[in-house]
Image (cartoon, helix red, strand yellow):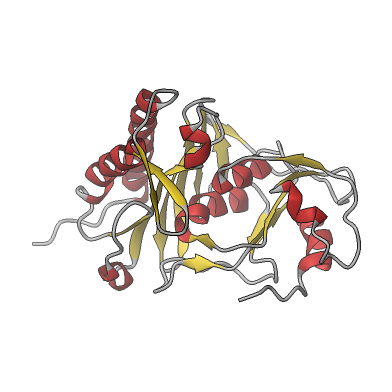
Length: 268
């Protein structure tokens, strides 16, 4: 007789415990002399990324052998495409900041079901910020419910993004003055929007499932919106787990930003 399918609460408890343990391991490497190397795409990886990834795989994939696994630091297994539930993992999002000893990184894990995240945990152990979300049950930061802000104007908004992007000469009109919040971790930027520490996040370069899945659910459950820059919803666990861009904000500011960037044609 087959074992009963895990309940949503059992998955949540497993996820939270695994991400907290991953944070403990990451802190053991944080602000120490790390072994680092480069991988494809001029991306840095450290021994901490691998250690955290291995621990998360042990704590999540082994107890759920029927779930798929997609991680930045694991060779992609196409078997995930046959699974309705998939763990989507970034062991350390913001590795460059982590390697420099800066607290702008996060462990990001989502449980994706039929293309969309249904459980999410995002943990910055350096600042002790633990974000959590579940479909239909809201989002929390350290156990306290969070919600996006009500900002509606681009001018004066707090934008979590790469500042030089807004000064590029290709823009047909200058951007209004904004407070730019620079964070190496894309997932952490989006989480800051979810808890109203930032008003929006924008990126016009390619991101991966593991950069976005957990933060997507956290932001959505906090009342915000996350799409590609042209308004398309993000679907996860596809054959090519990449997304051309991202636009994240509360509903009113989202509309204002979409009016400015929604019609852009980005280079291939």
